[in-house]
Amino acid sequence: MSLKIDRLNSIFVKEISKILQNEIKDENIKFVTVTGCEITNDLSFAKVYVTIFDKEKKGVTLKALDGAKGFIRSLLSQRIDIRHTPELKFIFDESIEYGEKIEKIIKDLNK
Image 1 (tube, rainbow, N blue to C red):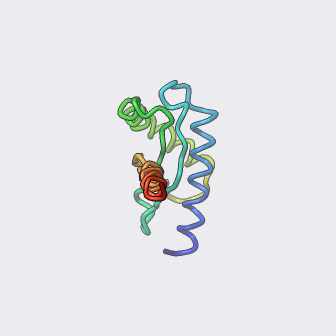
Image 2: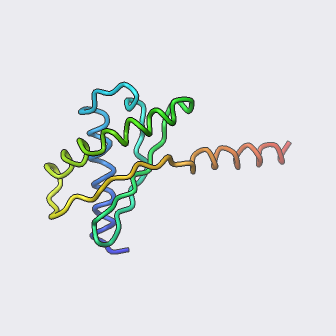
């Protein structure tokens, strides 16, 4: 991956986190953490990985994020100086749950 894409990935994570924390009024989106971003080389799409505090509201929260992605994208276009702001796709990041599962298995093996 290029240095420009890596830099944009980290900028997107920071800016989307700020937008979710300060600009979004939807209560379903309040406890969302942005864990990563992968922007395609042609800057047309961005996969935004998120974790959700309340696992029972995972579906509702992802649906609310999907509904707010146009608003988030418009704010990103104002804050980040790039020619074309990528389409956003929010994806639930399962790596934390996977890590917790592996950690539990290791603890059980050590007993």
